[in-house]
Each structure stands twice: as C-alpha cells, then as structure tokens.
Image (cartoon, rainbow, N blue to C red; front, top):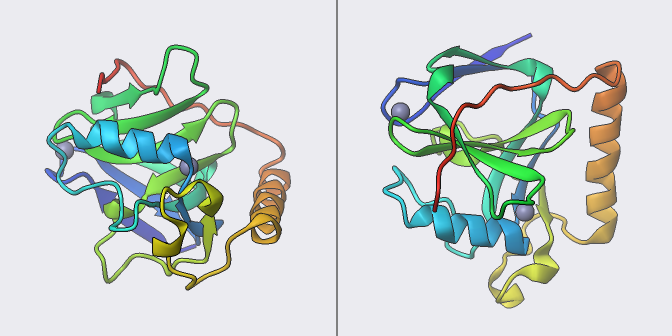
Length: 177
Ligand SMILES: [Zn+2]
Ligand SMILES: [Zn+2]
C-alpha cells in the first residue's frame, strides 16, 4: 500500500496516510463555513475556505492515518460546547489537520495538507444547498442528494472493511476562535 507523507506548515507535526482516500470532497455546509471563518481569525498558514467558500477534504479511514511526530501538539476546536464534531489543528503553526465526527471511523483531512499539485482530484461537493451564493459554486463535480448518498455508501463500505472499529485519536487541549 502506498504511503503519503504529510506535515504541518512548520514540520513539527508529521503524519502518514496509507492507500487511497475514501473520497475527495469540498463541503459547503454552514458548520464548515463558520469554522473556516472563525479559525481564519487565527494566524493560519493558508486560508481554509476556497474562493467560493467551500472547505476541501481528503477523507481517509482512521486506521490508515498515523502521526509519527508532534502528536502532542494537536489541539481541538469545537463550534460550541455541545458540538459533536471537532476540528483539530497543529498548535505549533495553526495548520488545520482534520475534521472528526464523534464516533466516526473516518477522518476528513484538510486539503491544504497536500501540495496543490499533489492534492487528489475533487470528486464530490457536499451541502451545496447551504452555500451563501450557490451560483458561485462550480458545477465541476457531482453534488446533491444522490451523489451524497454515494458518499455515505463509501463510508459504510470502508467501515465494514475495518470490522466496525472506531480508532481513537488522543488530543490534549483546545483552541478558542
Ligand atoms: Zn507546525
Ligand atoms: Zn461541512
């Protein structure tokens, strides 16, 4: 299985992903937009939001992601105290690393961990109905309910292959934004 080496902007956090992603998406939901705006107030190495307001993700099985150095620098950001999702950044340089759903068996790694010419091609846009200006969102790849159902099917197939396990990722400390 091929391995891709990824790192935060300063290089203190290094991670490896193995094999191919489950899917490559750009999300236009209100939570991702709000997180992109709020985290954008920090000194980020690159903006999270694309020019048309989406957030680019490369979705991997959790058991195919491992941190080799700097795991102690991971910090989580939640949109509110009751939020079941968390967005994890590298505290050394504020590089956004991944979005994780509570109980989820996958990680949505932020696309900006990849060099632009190495980023796997976009396959799906999710939640385009939430985009503040839908007409600004390109119709370059599928979006909408049917395509999104295919995304959930791929997640389920991955979970079956994982034996319905949910690996845990330890994150100490939080980030306020
Ligand atoms: Zn760093
Ligand atoms: Zn989203």
